[in-house]
Image 1 (tube, rainbow, N blue to C red):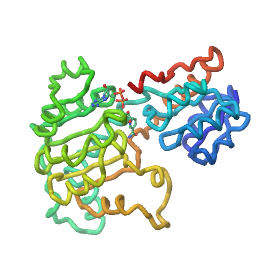
Image 2 (tube, rainbow, N blue to C red; image 1 turned 60 degrees about the vertical axis):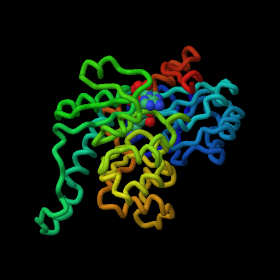
Image 3 (cartoon, rainbow, N blue to C red; image 1 turned 120 degrees about the vertical axis):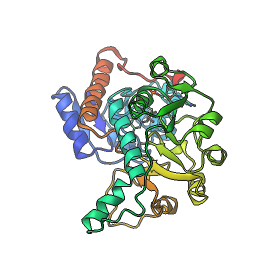
Image 4 (cartoon, helix red, strand yellow; image 1 turned 45 degrees about the vertical axis):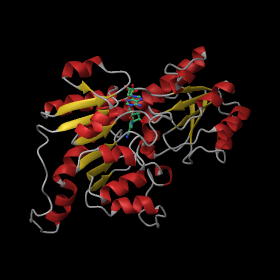
Length: 333
Ligand code: NAD
């Protein structure tokens, strides 16, 4: 099958080619998918896309006219795909539901530890011969309460690691996870989680219900000095409200691996350019904010699994017309 792979980086190519082993004809393009770049998929029956590709209605209409029948996402989240239009046009959409929850969960805990103990600042200080400790004060994680929003595959691993640290874990999820209950996680309301957590960590998908879940009202309910961690999807957090929360000192620490306007920033080297996003640049001015550029998934194991499952989706679609991990429209509910 002919497949156009959008938003390709060298590592995508390396892992996808290894998993493909010559079975399908993969054409790698660096461009993001949008209505402007959909034409690059001419002659392809399938395309492969990533988190910041725009699979909206105008793009889907063009892809359909070109004969594209499968969209294989090489990620778990699918908030960037208009599933209703895809179904209307009889284009199947597949994803990689679980490539390594450990990769994202471990990065989340890494952010919590680094931000709390200011490791990112200590690293620079020591290299400059500054061994003073002022400004590096942290807190024990042991005995603290962590609120996890979404206890699916990633949230469960985060809960497991943090209970190992001796934390109390509260959670919000419309579908409580029995393994988390066994771990001692207590399911509470969103208001209770906000009021009772020293750390709030987001692991739910971005849906119309979770968009700006962390808004001014939620921040108002949180503990003074709360640490907020988002490794899920940027738009779950209202960034302007979070900046106000940092300025009022309600939010004591903020760790982000995702950002609501990340499409124009992340995955690119912009170090010699002027960044126009004033909201993002404001975030960078706070000493108690730690940001990584959507790298939580980025481990050897995750990239191997992503490539293998993406090729499995393409292969099963070719054989049976149904990708192995198809996303159905019911997921929107
Ligand atoms: P999952 O589907 O296994 O778990 C998501 C959980 O969220 C489910 O248990 C679901 O019931 C729950 N949920 C749904 N709506 C909710 C709501 N309104 N409030 C609270 N909980 C809600 O997904 P996962 O594999 O654990 O991934 C979670 C998210 O992490 C993905 O949707 C994706 O956006 C993000 N992610 C980020 C990266 C990264 O590199 N930063 C990598 C992979 C996934």
